[in-house]
Length: 141
Image (cartoon, rainbow, N blue to C red; front, side, top):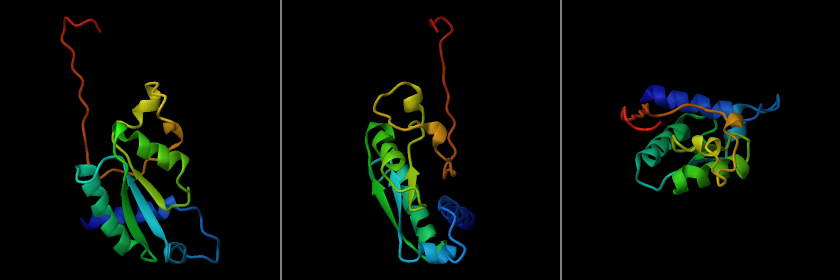
């Protein structure tokens, strides 16, 4: 658990723009709110992981910023991913906790997915999932 919290703190620090020479990381985050935008409704595993990370970030990031979790469920996490990519500031105060399939949506031609996954940064994960595909030997594939 402690390793996860340290990792989350490092990730949060790396998400910010380089601070001016006179501003420390603590000064940058002090008094600010970091938002974790979750691509699912409240109560699921993505939400629970984000809330756990929020507690760790609040305690371990220099400057002790407030961390708020915002749920934007629906459509396989596309609304949350669109928001983080197109609307949220790119200053280290927004983190996307998107669903594992959301990055594939624009690659599969979904017109509602208005983000370019090749320009997004992957910070890490709180879970390890394995994807499996199967096809019967007589299926036309």
